[in-house]
Each structure stands twice: as structure tokens, then as C-alpha cells.
Length: 249
Ligand code: NAD
Image 1: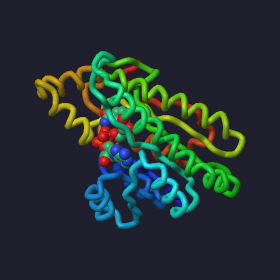
Image 2: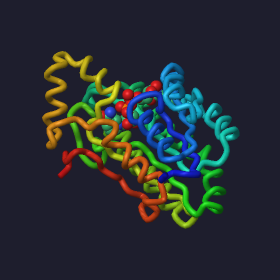
Image 3: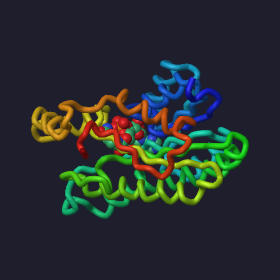
């Protein structure tokens, strides 16, 4: 069991990559705290694996985050997975769109890390190592994509934030990495495809930019999540780890 004895919190855990990650971490022996705003999704996650502790948490709500940090105890792993894909070029972005995506995709990670890192630093003194994992994307400082102006900017900020946290706390046993997936078949991706003027063509276009000829599944991503939260990655910090099916070859 690669995460035996570790307490790990996963945000955006009701569906998609977050949910699959919560299940994968539990399967590797972690005590998992799964949070999301989707209570129905959390209930079905708890029904699928009764060992997973679920809490409704809006990662945009600082006081709720602080309250949860006070009640769940010290963490060994924090996976900040929540994020939103805005569709459009810079000419399509209102200041409200920009503020919303920056808040959900970046500032939420600031809030979560500020709330949970003090306990993780204490834990690191006993355990030797703790891990913060932030969800970025290949669409970030790594590569530009059509109609991902706000999204790419927020995920680039996630990578910058990740490197700063890694640099500041490397000597205290805290590792911090960013995960950068390619296009993953999740409920929100299905929503983006359905919302396109021609959904059949939209799916073909998503697949066409994947050199391996297919979208990722969540099971292509979770092995990296488990690795980066486990001690197997004990010498890895400050990295933007790509799992993109070869898009950036
Ligand atoms: P998704 O978009 O299907 O689900 C996101 C989850 O986040 C939902 O359960 C939703 O309820 C939750 N959520 C939304 N706002 C929240 C809030 N304020 N507080 C708490 N939870 C909230 O999941 P996904 O597609 O797996 O995406 C998860 C992460 O992975 C995102 O950060 C996304 O940007 C990133 N990502 C996704 C892909 C992809 O192709 N799907 C690729 C690269 C990166």
C-alpha cells in the first residue's frame, strides 16, 4: 500500500480526476478527506468507498476552509484539484470571467495551502515529508491553446505558485508539485463538447490534438497523483509534471 498511514485531502472530489484520485488514494491505504460543493456527488463517492470521509467545502470560502482545517487534523497530502475551464480568447473575457477563474483556479489554492500548510509542517517534523499537489494543465505556461486565454493564464499561475511553495518549504520537508494533464474525459469535458456548435466535430478536434489518438481517462492520471502524494516521489519538488499523451513532445 503506497499511501498507508497517510491522511490526504482531495478537492473537487465529487467527479472527474478528483473523484478518481480520492478512490485511488483510498485504494493505496490513505485516510482520504474528499471535499466538493456537489453534495450528491460526494454522497455517491462515500457510497462507493465507505472509508472516504466527505465534507461539503467551497474552496472559494476562506472561513469554511479555515474551519475544516481546524477539524480534520494534520494532513500528509493536499491535492488542490478544483478548477474551471473558461472558453474563449482574450477578446471574449469579461473582468468578471477573469476574476472568477483566477479565484477558483488560483486563489483557492492559496487559501487551502495557507489553511493546511501549518499542520502539514508539524506533520513533516514527525513524518519527514509531506506533499502538496496542485492541479495545473498542459494549457498553461507550457503550451498555448485556442480559446484558453483565462484558463491558460490561471494554470500558469498555479505552476508559479507551486514553485514558490516548493522553494520556501523545501528545507522543512514539504514538497509541492503541479500536475499538468492533457485532455481528460471527465463530466466537465463532456459538457464542453456538448456545448460546442457541432459536438461531434468538437470531440474529433479534441482527439486530433492528442498524438496518441485518444483522450486521457482519469485512470491515466491517477497513477501520477498517487506517485506525487507518496514517498516514492520523495526527491521530486517544484515540478510541473506532464501527463499529456505526447501533446508537448
Ligand atoms: P470536473 O470539471 O468534471 O469537476 C470539477 C469538480 O469541481 C466538480 O465536482 C465541482 O463540483 C467541483 N467544484 C467546482 N467549484 C468548486 C468549488 N468552488 N469548491 C469545491 N469544489 C468545486 O473535473 P475535471 O475535468 O476532472 O477537472 C478537475 C481539475 O483538473 C480542474 O482543475 C481542471 O482544470 C483540471 N484539468 C482537467 C483537464 C480535463 O481535460 N478534464 C485537463 C487538465 C486539467
